[in-house]
Amino acid sequence: AALAKDLSLPRAVPGPLPEGVGAALRTDGKETWLFLMNFNGKAEKVDIGATMRVDMEKGGEFSGKVHLEPYGLRVLKAG
Image 1 (spheres, rainbow, N blue to C red):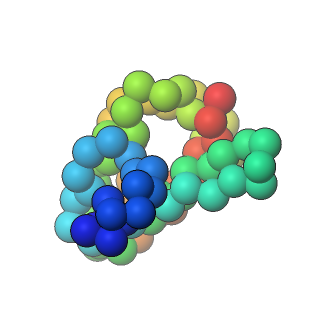
Image 2 (cartoon, rainbow, N blue to C red; image 1 turned 30 degrees about the vertical axis):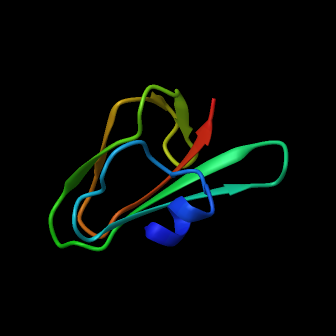
């Protein structure tokens, strides 16, 4: 976390992540995707902030808190 701050790297989500949850941003230069990964055996919620994102698997738009199933993965595209 300190290295990311020193390099001024953007955060994938605005707030802290629950223990056992990962978040990563990926881009092709035009569009950006947010990958949320839950490595826990229980459901978790992640605050993705106010930016509206589209769920690439199930459709639907999300902002704010997103539900992750146990061992779940969500791929959200900036909408």
